Length: 295
Ligand SMILES: [Zn+2]
Image (cartoon, rainbow, N blue to C red):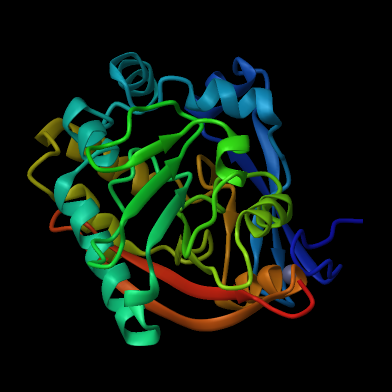
């Protein structure tokens, strides 16, 4: 019996789904094509039934967004050109708008001058860490092994992460990619202490909701060549089925709250905001939490 990965409810709806050909190729050498999409009627969480293991993720994210990755992906997704790849990989305005969004959110809800050090867990090069005046040390932990940007200390091993203490631990745009979110939250919990703030940010989207406005904005930008625009446009119009790509989980505010509360977190603040990166707009969920007494 299928049940919700977050709230364990068996009150679920199951829909047939398929793997994006590029994903099937990278993770399973194209041997797997279908899966199911499970929607929980209790907490609103949706997820693909297929849960890739560590080896599959290693294959998928190997050389993530480097030249070879881009070329390989373009074979399956012709619109995935070099410009789009570099925008998604590291676009200054995107990082800047995300940093500003987080800074505004934190200023609204907490005394930010208590933040002396920050860890971005899964934070690529550390480019999303906000500029907080009182913050002396910025750290990033990321499995991709990319070099951290100037002013950010790269932690490559989990042991290094556990050896330090942090006032703010960020985990942004990560939980939608991983097979076992509860396990990840359990680990992140151990990194912090009772004074630490934990900030989670996720895209606010759903496989059932076709954000046509956002999709059009994504396609109609100056980086898409005309022929790619046609290809992507036809793909959007034609493909009405549920397709598993990099996002394998779709959270709602309710399901994210349940996930955190189950691990003993207290919610400090939450908001849904638009992050405008000039070339695309994204609706995101922001949740700030602290460890509760039961944690
Ligand atoms: Zn649920």
